[in-house]
Structure formats: C-alpha cells, structure tokens
Image (cartoon, rainbow, N blue to C red; front, side, top):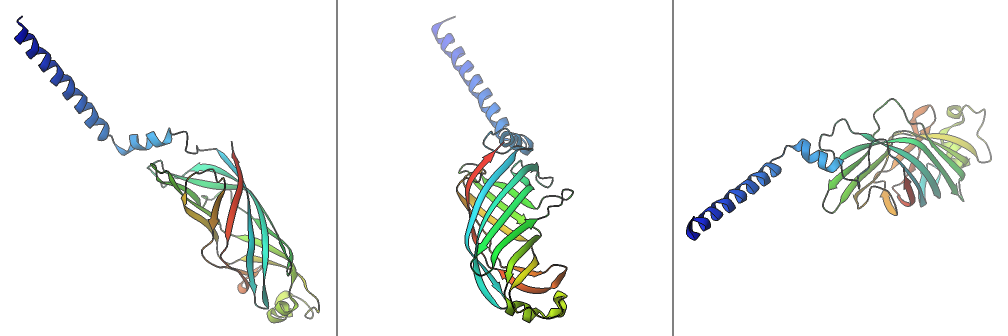
Length: 240
C-alpha cells in the first residue's frame, strides 16, 4: 500500500470512530426520563428512602394574638423525620417526609408555659415534601406541614375567658384569675423555604407565611387566638 493509500485509510478510520462517538453521545442525550431520574437517584448528595433526619430549631418572639390581648412566645422544637418515596413523582426529585417525633415547648411572659403537640397519622400520605428544584445549584424546596396541633396554654387571660363565655368552657362562672386552656389549630401550620442549598436542614431558616387560627378543643368553630407568621432557625441536624 502506498503512503497515499495509507493516509486515506487512516482518514476513513478516524471519521468512522468520530461518527460512532457522536452516535453514542446522541443516544445518551436522547435517553428516556427514567434513566435521567436514575442518575439523580444514584446521587449520594440526595436523601434515600428510609433515611431519618433529626433537627432542633428555635423560634423567638412568635406573636400569639388573642381576643383579649397579645403576647410573644419563645419556642424550642425537636423533630425527627423519615424520608419516603413520593408516589406522585416520576422524576426522582421529590420525597415525602413523615413525622416520627415532634416536640415543641414555649415560654411567654404573658401566657406562661406553652406545650405544643402533633398527632401524626401513620396511615396517611405525609403532607410534608422535599423537592430538588435545581440540580446544578443545587436548590431544594422544603415544606413542613403540621395538619393539626394541640396547644396547651398555662395562663389564659381572664378577659379571654370572659369573652368566650363560661357556658362554652363548661364553667359555672367566669374565673377571676387566669387559668389554663387547651386549643387546637383551625388550619395546617406550614413552614417552608424555596431556596435551600442542602436538604440536611443545617443552619437554615423556615417561615410560615399565613396566620394560623386557634380554637377551643372540641369546638373548631370558636376561634379565640391566632399565631402570627414567624421564622424558625434550624440550629442543628443529623441524619442516619
């Protein structure tokens, strides 16, 4: 074979290899969404189903507005969540967060000790979600939803009890001093942040954007107080 023939053969081989590489690249870019989702599912920076997240957080100066006056509450919270698959998501970018444990205690100069508890339904689909909104940044969207909370207030204002009426409280007469009262939320409390750079909740803030009403336990039609929008600081987290 002459040198000219050899150069021509080499050129044909190069073009063939280049075309094969281009074809392979085209197949990769045209991969179905299932493969795209699998790529994200294999990313170790994302939570996995069954993983637990523990977070301790604080909310300072939360305004509790009642029919007879307002006060502020400092709240400390500890929550334990489990990551679960989102049956409505087919992109591999969204998870459900099931509440396994949620403890909240508050202190107020006006209302005394406030204890907040949540009874999560283990049979229902968790309403809280974590979504990967932007894989390159990355950016996550987190919504922690508390469908129903029970709020025990150590010192209810006498004026509040007067306004409610002794009959509604089952009392013979309106008390002359402040007493305890148990309330329930009239709508879900939602804490959210659409610009998280990590799903691990370390040193992030979450905010409620709507007031949440409080009614007498067992009497949801009698709203007597409102929790004004507030911000929570997640101070520590760990996952397993």
